[in-house]
Image 1: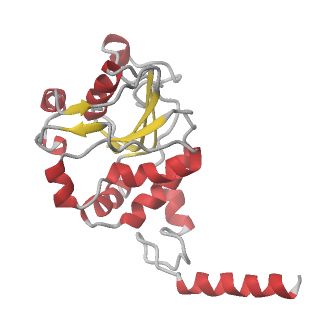
Image 2 (image 1 turned 90 degrees about the horizontal axis):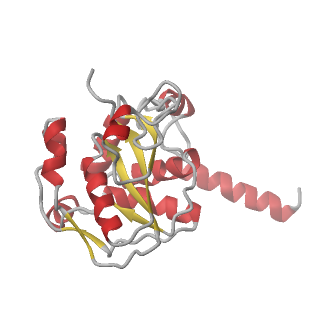
Length: 236
């Protein structure tokens, strides 16, 4: 190894030591990583096969009965994790604890572990301006940034807006969520022929993403794909 290479290697190791931290879950030393390898491996991966339309598990990866009888406005959906412990706690700390590093980390995970849909633009699920002021950031945008970088696809934060402040979906029974978000979004762009990728942190019923997909298709989008970090499984 040359003297220059040795010097660069020493600098890199010094920075790694300066950036060392504890794992968010078990507090073990994790160097510059957010989670230690053991905790990363224990995260609840969404197990295939899954319905290609809504990302819920199906016996052979076929389209599920609900998507056959009530097709969503989006064409494909994929998630990395099941919305279960400890992913639920990590997402909660990201959204409400302002841990933006969690969003950056899992945006990279989302890019690495889901297929690139080769979209023309990425649209993070918009927050209403009052919710954005309250939270200080849009969690969907923080997840979208690493996707944009990895897949060389622009993020569009201007064309779609949330025009109605609806009740929080998390506090509503599943059947009421579709009604709650009806008419919540608007689009100001001509998306004729565009392939649009919608991004959010969690997909529960998919009502918000479905409503936004409906709007972007009304504005000409040819295909709408969904990527979420976690998929909530329906109550048994």
